[in-house]
Amino acid sequence: MTEHRTRRPMPCLLVFLPGIGGSALRAADGTVVWGLAAARNPIRVPGLLVPKGADLADPGYRDGIEPYDLLAAPIPTLTRLAGAYTRLRARLDASYALDRTSNYLEFPYDWRRPAAYNAELLGDAVEARRRALGADAKVIIVAHSMGGLIARHYLQNDDRAVHCARVITLGTPHRGAVKALGYLVNGVEIKHLPFAVLAETLRRVPSVYELLPLYPVVADRRAGVRPRLRRANNLAAALGLDADLVEHGAALLRDLNVEHEFARRLDAVAGFGARTTPQQATLHSVHARRVLRVSGGTDLLAAHESGGDGTVPVVSARPGGAAGVSIGYSDQTHQGVVSAPAALRMLVLMIDAVLNDLEHDPFLGAADRPGGDPGAPEPALLVDVDDYYPSAGPVVIGGTARAWGGGRKLWARLGTNAARPVALAEDGAFTAHLGPAAPGVHALALTDDENGPALFRDVVEVA
Image 1 (cartoon, rainbow, N blue to C red):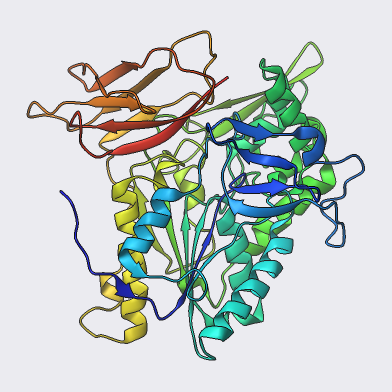
Image 2: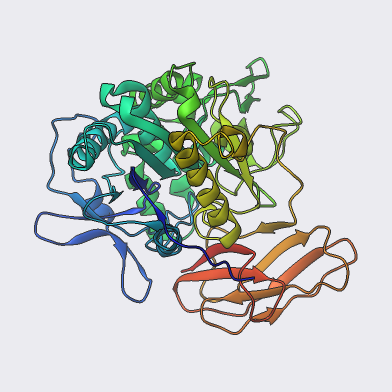
């Protein structure tokens, strides 16, 4: 069903921050070092991304590389973000009277740098634009993935954030992500050589360490070590990671996940549309060699700490140490929480709720805000998408469609290809064979109508 809505006035400054890898970067001479080509082929130049001798953790360090636009490229085996957030942009523009020169600000940032560094720049950009709207103008920030850590740091540490009415995070790893741990430890072993080189490069990027899980997720089962569940920051040496960068990342998340006076100004959306999300890890020693195995199992964790968007577990997308935070749930993946129609509809409702609060309408106030935290609802679609697919083989997607009765159909569409029907087993399990695809990044959509709108969105990289 198509929605029709008159664009609502936006008296606040509405700000959007992308996730890790979501800002295009270029060198001083104009060379693009991170982004997407016109044909949606990723541009990733490891040699320029982290120059020799770079100290990206030093606020005073400059290498001439600057962000210039929202344009995400995937980080293979870490995140599948791709594109310019066009669907989110379009939905916001259709819902609110926005002007990119006044009340709407997109904030691409140098995602290689620490959250604190970017949070200060965010504060400068927000304040300059907010003051132009008026001394009492309020700010609403929407942030995806890593962008939520930057926005939250701004909210909790910048005195100018007194004017921030709300920070809404979408798939943000408030307590870190096990997938980042696996990437930093095992990424260099990726069989596809260019991806392994990129992983080796990103081991020197401070911001990736800020994504390491804060809570105990590693079962230490090395020979001669008493078995126990440990935190990543207590295993830096055993995992072969830079201890200073690991501790820096842990310190950031500890600081963010404490009770704060502005905690009630934080809303969060957790995705749970992936059938498998890395949740825990086991550390073994095999022939004197360290082996870290990351899995989607939850046998080491509490029962409620399951599910996720394929990148960020639900337990991490819920902010820690923040009583009273409104939590929304989206049956989408890490890409889908910023692109699927249902997820964007939820976002608009959350922004509307903030505006209603500010207007002090007793009939359209805080009670209308999506959230509470009853736990994630039962998803209708759970989907597994590989981090990348070899160009020599077919693209195959597996999953489960729950509560899909009444003769309801399922269709899968890859890129601009026609939708293909997908056979469902009695228990709802399915395997979608989408054939071979050219190298590059392709949009994936699942729908219950051959020509209907997507119910589930993600991206597939072929290399």
